[in-house]
Length: 309
Image (cartoon, rainbow, N blue to C red; front, side, top):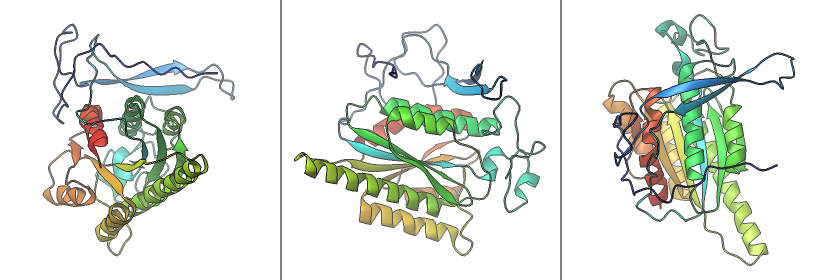
């Protein structure tokens, strides 16, 4: 069995990275040089192989693009091998539909239908916002898979606690892992997310160095972490932000991890942005005002990955 990956469009004009403000392109306009996703729909299809004998919902968030969309090409060399760890926030604020849902320490745990659950998404996904996050993570994996480099993907999920879901996967395996993520709810623990990504990336490098020495070849993979979150940390209890910052400094300075924060915030919060910039290697934060706009960050993030050192 083989997995078909969409081929690169080598005939399209070069497109400069877009900013976080997306450009809306009329559906029939195929001449515009810069295109960003402006709308995201959920498509559902029946799975006839459901073991329960019934139909199951398979959700695939996809961005609608005009035909002949130009292919983005980073300005930096994108053929350097890399290992990428994507840390996915599953805290209660993502699926909470009211302040009451967050009034409990472990908001949205179990995805209660009256405060957190949305219609037309699977039980494991819980709400539209988390479906957008999963769709965005999948979009980045598919896009990065087209880089002419050796790469692996690790997935970490975090809320009250972090968990390493998978490591050193191919892009096909990582897409399956993202699709199967089960929303937990809870509070926000950036420190464990960063620590687990660091451990995963360090183990990946160690394995690659061992394999290359055994085969008399060379290995120089970059270690990159993409932290997708909608708020500042709220645990551990004594100093959540300080603990997260210490983990970020350790990952950057001792293990060479390049940290890229992706931040969803409906309003500008100067303190939160200051904290997010502190996590980043280069003082950059890739932020949007809502979950549906995450896909507009794709081109600028591809640029960031290709130019990371």
